Image (cartoon, rainbow, N blue to C red; front, side, top):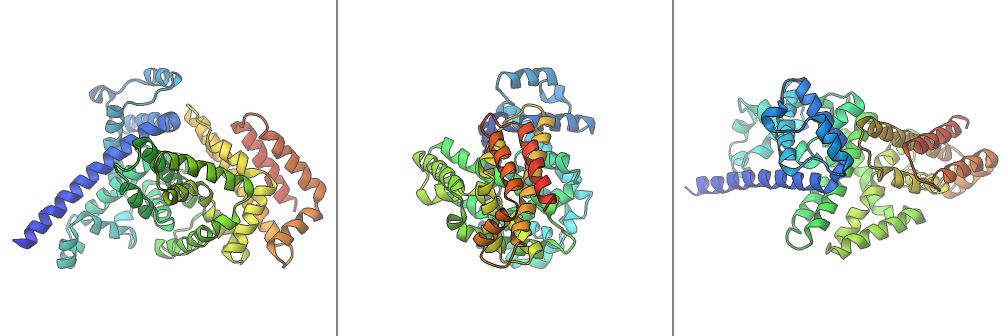
Length: 413
């Protein structure tokens, strides 16, 4: 009887937890406003094409009405987001079952999240051999990915990269576990009722943004051929090293930007340490690029980070990337162009960082200075051009031009 009672309590807690997360997802989506509207609209259209959604049945407006809404500064309503959330999970589960994801050694561990801990501990073999094992894994992953990434999370990434749902699931797990995002979310969950709802949603939104960026990064740059476990272990170690040294590594502009954001979160009631941790996520998002450069150059992560942030500061890229990330666009193709421009900008920065690391064998600061002194005219011209681009309003075109200038400089080294 005691065993059954504890099981009943755990099952109830698991159900309530999923309800909590679904409600939270809707609130974060509302908080982000039009930032995700193009992806919401594109997902509705994609679900219609595959015959999985009937707008009339679900009382969803047509494209003209939605675009008129967006022009007035409004996105989907909460009930409409709830419909999209449900269909996103159903579609993702179906897509995951058509891949090898439920059979993957690392991802299959999601099976145990579905059952009460007491049951898993007592009947591990029975749970592991469950006849609906694949379906359970696909269900748990679908819930987790959409609850933490938002209704259009998977569709957005599939469209941006031409990846399938299985690849997105692998990249999601890599991003989540390399950055230790469950710990961030758990700490933030514990603040329920202790800080303003608006501040808490803003903090959740920062975590969601990092999850999306990091998942996209792994889709474009990570290799899953050797399995997820070693990939995640390597990047988790590297992210940890960057995180531990971040305060000392940050150039002045980024340090000031993080301090301002942290103060804003703190003024909304967030504890100082939590406010700082979340404010640093935008800079910590560069950690995967840094680890990649370190591995390719055969140097320590700290050295690669020093060179990376040195290049960022030299070309004033912190300002331009921050401005680019704040652009809100209503057209999904404009969004895709913005994403591509930012990705090209970061790729060029990686290439320039590699050039600096390959320039001599001394201290990183000395190498950066020597690299600059070896080609002062070419480098200073690019610095002046990039600086000029951020003096006015930063647009997708300006970001694309900046990325092109930096890429050309890296190629001419």
